[in-house]
Length: 504
Image (cartoon, rainbow, N blue to C red; front, top):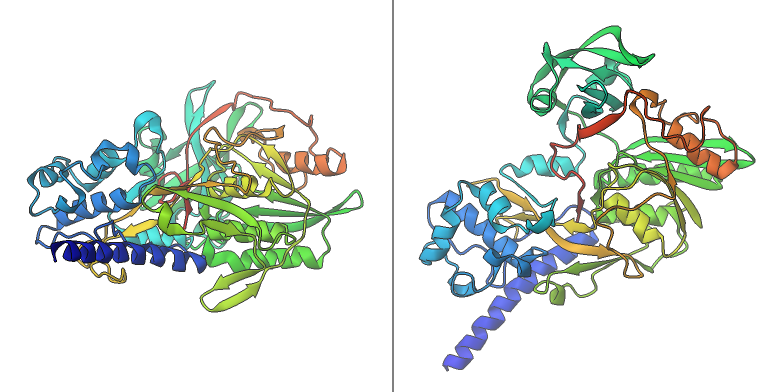
């Protein structure tokens, strides 16, 4: 009888874990960010006391113990770390509870107690105490100033500054006339420094500043001043799409800045326009694209091609606990975008070659598109080496029901840990040092050009590769470093959830 009872308990635990994995698989097919349960092999957090802080810490440990990609490599996440996995009860196991409480707060536990920090292997897992901000980010909604900027140091002069890379359409910044290339040296009468930049640019509700331009080796005032508020402005990641008629070719150009599932149809509509115009070549500009939805990346790859529907685009490698239950852990080229119960036909170009512009800001799902296409078509990469993020994450909430539908109403903590490594159809996925370009050319702050204009340096160099004609007005491989030689320290997205992210 004891053996039979034990066997029934094991089967029940297995069903709980399988159900939580099924939630992931089912919702992944819907191609949206997923609300995943934190069930481990023993189910959800089993702490039922009134100490909310302890509940949160217990949820963090159990979620990472179940799903974290490097669970087997982290000593504090081992199943037998506190006796046995079944003994990890926060209200009964003294050593487990003491460990959880030994960290100053849940973030300290997450970052310093449980992640794989050996040689900075894990650079991208994160946690938040307000999952609403996280969910908004996945929808392309973040509190910002309406400008995408780069902050850093001008090496020769030692001046810290921010310069505008592009202005978000329909934002206050656009309405007031801020432009790409505008330079900001001080905010609210405070000179920008390494230590105050994030506070001034991302956390100060209202800012005022004057703008400058780099002219004749120095910063000249434009005579314009601006006052901007931090506000949530939905940003369509399809920033520019247009077609160039050059050299007997119709060359499509798409500047795409984030893989946001809410804008999948906008992306598909851009390809519908390309298709209607009968384009012969495609330039995909991902220089500012830090990643996003794996499903959207799969759709984009399918729009570029179309002749490989049903074939493997990417393969997921989970930890040894999860992998056996994941079944067919693959993403496939497809003919349709799936939204709830709707199927939307993908507008595909059936390209056999694509030109992709990258930079040191190109990451994650952007790199997935490049790597996933390489077994099938020729990918010509123009620009700089990418960041090098070949892992994906899921959102883990603290659910209080076995079905994984009811979030704990006592707190708003959620995790976005790395849970899988992603490879292409040929098993290639080791690019932690980034994907190197075929044609190297950097974006230089003193010569940004106008995005989408054929004389903009990176676009011009790519057009030259297609047509053989140089339209930039400079040497084709110039990486000239003027006194504006710039060390980027952060960008406008550096403080946001999901920076350089690839999620299911």
